[in-house]
Length: 237
Length: 76
Image (tube, rainbow over all chains, first blue to last red; front, side, top):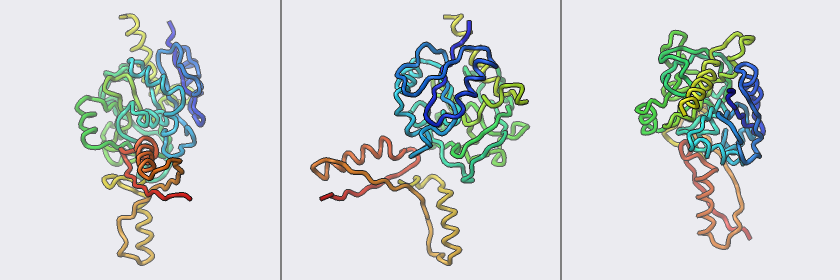
């Protein structure tokens, strides 16, 4: 049974086809692009909010995408436990839509940063990381100008207490340091899940590190995790 | 709208360095923000304030990172 991925396309999305390609051609699952004007996601198992510059990043990154008609159904899907995977701009949209806590500020360097980084897997018991082990180091690229994660102390403590921090920027040996922090993110945070664990937002681009033709395949572990976890869940149901 | 005081404003810091380079050492705490103008078609100042505050809280500013303030001017 193939899993059904739905990739939402906003005006200004530019990683939508990459995500579609990974889901369909690399993973061998079903994948469908969903235009943001549609009011229903239809029959999907996992929604991807892809990277890009929705609405040209006007006002704030992700601030306007949350008013796209499809977002009502994305919120409904997420609140019913549906798997939602927000990558880069998708992460920014998820925080603006209130599906994840915190905010993504301008990079501390004020520069757009496009390079490979290392991520430490802090929580391997999510739908998105079940094929990883805690402490694994993944090499996945980032490409963003506004990826500096921030939350107030109370929110940060809650994220830590509930094990919602999934990835932190680290060096190749897994050490978390300021030198390994590409954008100034609080606590080197690169990706978080919501409390229920079904919504993930991350700044790095796993879809750009999935096809062996691109030589880096660590990102594929996250998509494989989603497939394994959801197929397993459906077999239990 | 400006970034909240608890949040580092790297643009403001860079501009502050520039101001100091010009010789104005007495200038500090430079914060860079956004300025938005809008018309509100209602009959009282109080309604205009309420609506402006709501729109600011719900969309124009993100309260997690930004503070905002506004002034109302009557249009003839």
